[in-house]
Length: 270
Image (cartoon, rainbow, N blue to C red; front, side, top):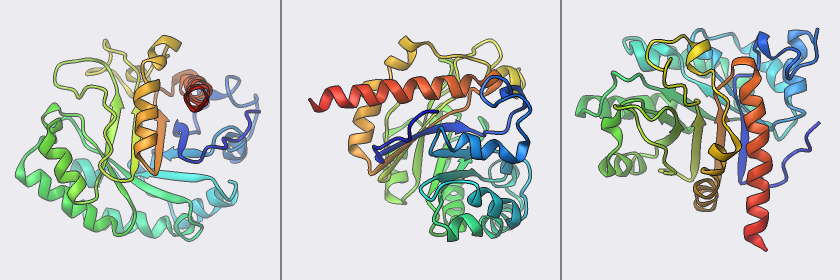
């Protein structure tokens, strides 16, 4: 078991926790699904819930999630795809999601919503207005926005996000034309970084299983240490999630970075 992190200025976890191919790799063989979050929470103090992108469960589900986690455990929940991809019924989708999330909100364990927009969502006046609309729907819950299209990589966009209290999601992904580069930008007092892996071959045409099937090397994570330390020092809290979930690679890399980052911060304080 990994000891719980003492530095509360940053949190490291994975994007999702209930994957069948984590059994025998992270979870003990035969561990019931209902006990997986309990086990996960012994190793990490935060998690990104991604299943809400596909369907919104009832409040009872989140009641059980909050009961299974320690008092200081924190959740980030992805918005439903209707909010980011369909957008015709975004208000209803957000209302249903927030209603379902009440147990986490009341327990002060919901720390933000993640809106992951598709590559087709470009930097236009209409889409910037839609971001404000989405922020309004989220109410007082911090909203983090992830862009896939390079047109958002502009200083005026970051100024816009900062002016309206929208959190920017930094991403590590394949270095492909049209995608955003790795950055360490914070547009609110909460910073956010997602590691998707660098699987160039399957990025555009692959499935969720193949696209994110990538294991970061220690050298690749080492490149992030100073940018992350800088981000942590400039922010009230920094959330770092690994989305390279196939075969438990996200767990392996999250553990690696957790150790490396703690060591780096300790050395810089000496």
